[in-house]
Image 1 (cartoon, rainbow, N blue to C red):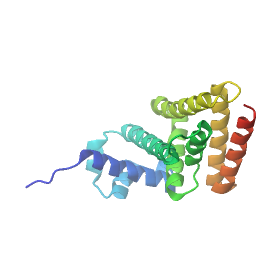
Image 2 (spheres, rainbow, N blue to C red):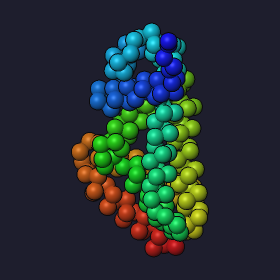
Image 3 (spheres, one colour):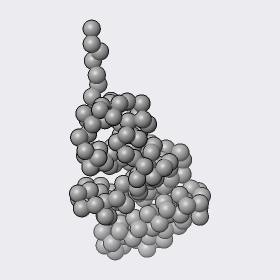
Image 4 (cartoon, rainbow, N blue to C red):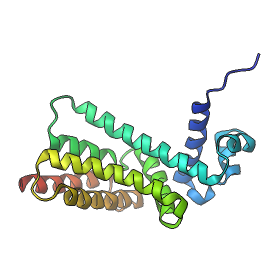
Length: 194
């Protein structure tokens, strides 16, 4: 009797293989053949689920966006109720720092994918949509916090800081704790200005 295949689980398995490759060897190493080997499946199976590499990369970007969103949701839920707007902002932003193995893997792979969107017009819209989703979330959190100034501007500056801190942690310039302290100092300054 044939076994029933969980197609979503198989797509997840393949996407995670791309994430591991992107996080350890860089996205250029993620050929369909390498992805199949990393996932422990046949090349034909990868091609069954993802007809082209473009389709695979788009799916992986969505997969990473979902992982980042889930981390943010868990961090905010862990605050309990009632959580202050500043606490929600802090939880959202610090969750996105590559301070542990899981977040490092996700941020490395997401950065590799986002960098690809800068030079690949087919991937650009999808990459920007994920970045815009985060921008909109943080803008909303700043609006709820009633921090002085335009919430969209505050969000843009804070996310630029976050991106720089992510890169500095990945490069070894700062530890996760140091990056968190810098982000905390930034939020402290903004909330003093209220």
